[in-house]
Length: 351
Image (tube, rainbow, N blue to C red; front, side, top):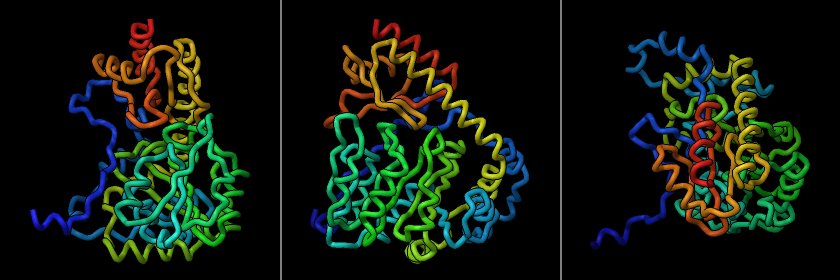
């Protein structure tokens, strides 16, 4: 068709499968297995439906912004709030990666990065992880148009220490470095304190994992006020009213309940550590994970075969038919009961 020559063609991101049957054990999208903070349900019950006829407040003027700024010890001018961290990251790609030089990110990482780069016509180079799936900081000490990487990395779960992150940021003062900390609350140390020294560092986090609010789509970035200002300029050039009324209200409640937040993260960490022992006993190997998931490979059986047999037993995990990782499964940490069901089926499969 003639009009197709004017269409922007990209290969889209493929999310984890969302089965229609909610009775399956869903360990494929790194959702939190526990409900959000109790105050979230209470706040939902108090929502005024009449407010839905009005545009929501700008995120930086809300109780959510106030709660986040207080929790992290930053000012509102250092904070950007968007519709999930995917929205925040997509806007950051549009805003900060405008050089003719390629941006750098790992070859095994969050698979949305190359999608956004292709969509926005941003040149990029993938830097190979080493044999232990670790980022080599020296690979990022070359001229580039920007740097982005998750810490802990996804889907591997491997964590870089703060000194390594600092080395990459310090080596790239002439470009923006984005650290995607979607999983930092499951045992890592955030690089957020570095924004006091480095005005080129943007730290991105999300409510989807550790705060059990994937369904509300809340993400945020923290950095120098100038970075946040540029990000807002782009956001308000695309859609000024990005956050919905309900998300802004209940997001604040999720931040305020600090005790529940830490309790929930601790439960997942404890279950993850037990899962490492169970999976190891079944013949799986995996890098040391600091996320709410384990990236596992079996000593005898192919990942694809295990994936199919688990699915036949109504247990969903994540499998990619991609170079270097096509014999690995990413297994989300569920409740103890869900994980026990996983182990029972794996014992049958692995024999």
